[in-house]
Length: 354
Image (cartoon, rainbow, N blue to C red; front, side, top):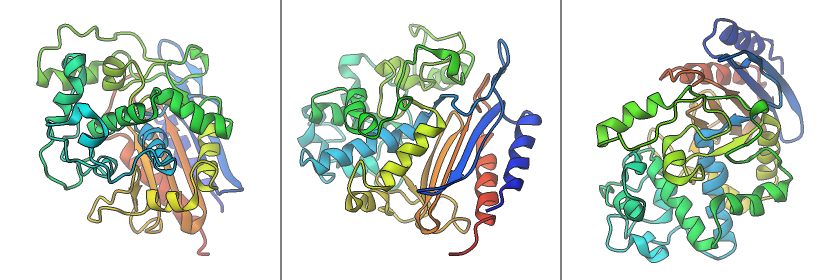
């Protein structure tokens, strides 16, 4: 495939300062078609050129890569079933709004939990019960960070180890990944920073209560998770966010995931198929057919608030990875969606039907 148009488009995005910089990789299970870096990894307080091995805060890519996949590994091990109720799995959820909620509902964002809440405003010993009490009982798709925070706690309870340790033992060590890990990352020289402080998080949290006791970060966030719930509520290790990686490790992970090195093909098929229908189709961790009419209906993927994206189209043996530092040094809402869509459209336009 010829991807000169993609190259020109990403040069335009960075030269016109829509985003400071990015790294983009396009290929298949066995071949690389495109791998380029653009712009700057950092623009304040000094410029740092983007490199192909720059490490990014993956944000919500944590949900399918660490959390949902860990749940499926536990199911393969016979330690839980996705149809299990939370109240039966974790005693803390007994007699809460999530007592009858299934693990599958959390995975597919159909648990009735709202999209977001500043968990760190709740005392730690009350946090899980209070979050569970927010469930409405409705079962339509509502993309919820809270549901994945609860899934992270399910993994820790069932496995008996922390989420980051479970990831290391069952995924990254198995595949041989070095940069794909939960933060904090001490060597910040290779990491694309995110926001200067947590201004965006503060503006959201203030609507939910008194935020004066929170020790808000004012420094440049680099090597520590951008997401406030993960950082303030769960010390950087949460089911909704917290992963870091460079693009090559993300590609290696994806190939191992598709090649049956982490879970078997039947489990992967169950994990990546549409379980909800409707306009926003959800699988067990992924969004299915995220670009309808552009990629095949079997395509699945996920994005991250910081500017990340992983899209897989099995019908065309296509993998697309775009890592951008879009929230550096300030959050600009709505910035990445058109950029992601243009990237996917350009790549899809270069694919010859097989």
